[in-house]
Image (tube, rainbow, N blue to C red):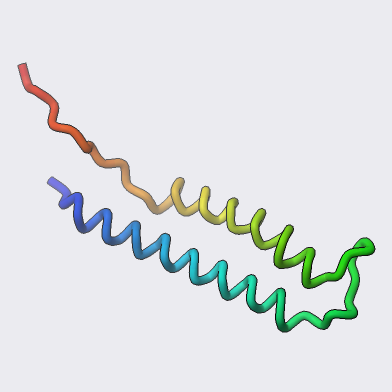
Length: 80
């Protein structure tokens, strides 16, 4: 039997790590990209921090859930 608390702790750690990575990506794209660079008429920092990063991290989140999360039984089933 797998310990549900160790699985939950591992998955919570993965979620916190992904959130910290998102914050780092947002910080880099918002503060380290020069303000005068443009992409499609928009400032590049805006496109990266408000368009690219959210889409990329939604995909990373889905990939993380699909590959790294373990399905667990939350309820107790009655055996006949």
